[in-house]
Length: 106
Image (cartoon, rainbow, N blue to C red; front, side):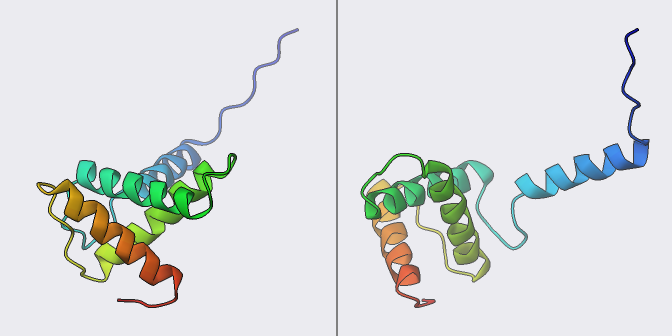
């Protein structure tokens, strides 16, 4: 006999869906479009991996840490680097990450 798993109550499914949307939502107060935020996170994750010597197995940790740092930078009101000047973007993100790693907030 093939027993079917009972479906969770609809309110639980809605709560899980809302939780997933919140996890991937752009934080309030950021004035950066999602594609630019993603680009900033990718650059920051690269620099975090570089700092630890690009050792394998910690890529997801780098991504989560970069996400937290970029979101903190944006929430603090730091103006985002200009996407029209990629070198400035990379330099400012690297500098911001170095400051945060040293325990400075600005």
